[in-house]
Image (cartoon, rainbow, N blue to C red; front, side):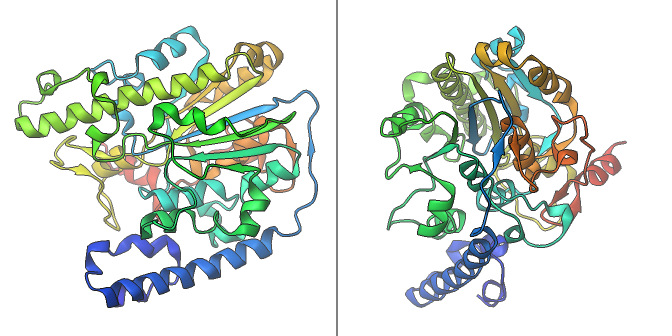
Length: 399
């Protein structure tokens, strides 16, 4: 309790497990402290964003930018990243045809959804120092540039039944003024499952330019809840891990089935925009342990100094960009830059700069040297948990 109360930033709010707050008194203290920290950060952010100017958009830029935010996706369980089982048949086929560009050196700065959200929404990057509230949220920049912005989340939405983790992930988005600054449309209810998330678009009327933000359940534990039972492809018999028990191999099989279902979900979203001039960016908020390597557990490890093995599975994330046929025809130079950038080292902490560049939005908040699609891109220090240099840790771990 003392450790929790000593936190002054919401980035550290989940450093103490909810199970520690096991009495009504402790629950009340937890809630009051969360609300106090959230209010302070929200007010700082609103002060920073309340006078954003109207922004211009480059002529003939792509009018439909789609961002799909996955969940708990260990890329080393994706056939796209050379996993041994066919967990990504649809996206692998799109990559083979050259319409989907798979980036192979992207990390998340956090293995916690709420912290990752704040990092990739804000233009303030971790290696610049300062707080995330010293930047602005990129959806607000899109809105000021004339884009209609839809945020469709199966996790963060308005409800009185939010737990502290969901609250910590979306408190600043649920403020009425902040919501108005960032979004034109939000869902009031979850879809039945990720496979029906497009149904949340029914009440949204697109404009001439649009930013769509889809936030999935992805492969969030428990994994057998993340895919329909009739979509079971793998069983414990398909997991070639004699070092694991039958129960552990069943868990891995559930995860791989959830990954294959996620492949179907993302493909459905791509098909929805197939006839539009549209570009789609997919990435996961963070990874997950699934009995990989010598770590015999599933879920996530929240050590302050994670090992290289933990980093590999929990902080390295899938990242890919798809262009519709119309997009590739109308923006050939931009698509060529996407192809050229697939091996660039990148943290999705710098996502706003990539998206602003894709959309052709002209703003002082855009930094070309942080945009991997820009000719001016320069690799930046990639920090984990605010102070761990990813590249140094991984280099020193190699034999």
